[in-house]
Length: 334
Image (tube, rainbow, N blue to C red; front, side, top):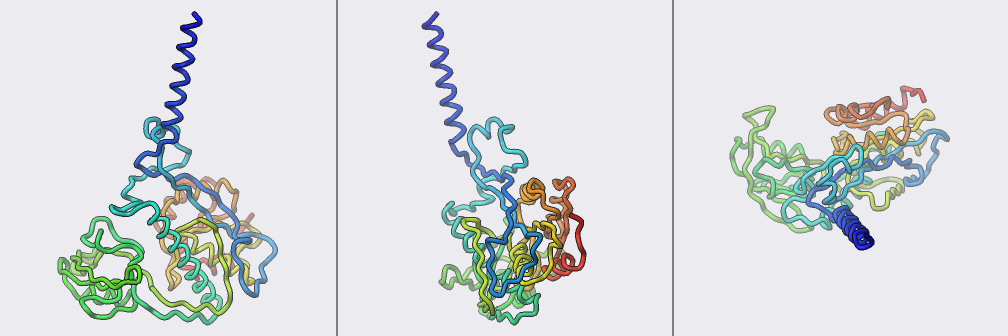
């Protein structure tokens, strides 16, 4: 009997060890889980600050990691509100996790600079931005440019014709017919390269040629006052909108009216609020933090946020100037 009990104990130990191994062993997919909503008051420092006493602006993050083997076998073990995405969605072929970390860190650095420029311009400050090309933000996965053009590339010419702005890029591409090849001159990692890609028809206008990329203005930006933003190891561009709102709050604009306002959204240099990922997780995080409103990009991001908001008020915006006006002129109930 003692021997049989010993065998059972041994099997139990082996089973626990196997389960533990499966729990810590990473799989090939990634999982997004709700992060935290945190106030920016101690993370954004602005020269000449004169903030209102009550109410905070919050940024919202998402935890991203690989799934475990056990989570793959038993999906109910995944955290509530999580979303599993294939590896290639975050790591295109030939891209390592360390390279992705460097890219998201660079995106955060640019997000801080653009948010500062957008906020100060909206507040009437003189911000100098010298155009240096069209910065690639995203590449559609189903176009010939995928794998040839990468986020972070700066397009400076089309078939030898110089382009300094996104509008100039669109105009040059639009002169071609869908299906025609174009040579793009790109600045990549401080080197100039030439890449030939085939255009495709625009979904809005079948007669107009596009490359299938999303771009923003690359520019040398000069900020007239000192602004320091530090989120530690958080990366990516999606905190641009809350950064700009916090800068406005710090410089005396009453964007909170004593409430706690969470926000997410990438900012383009012209103030456009661009869509971001992880809205399910971000909305749950904002809801759990008991903030009063959640400001998000208009469109699909708003629809996703409202599906998970519960009683949390969702405010859709298209531009930073719109968000600033809405929040400063429409007192909230909190």
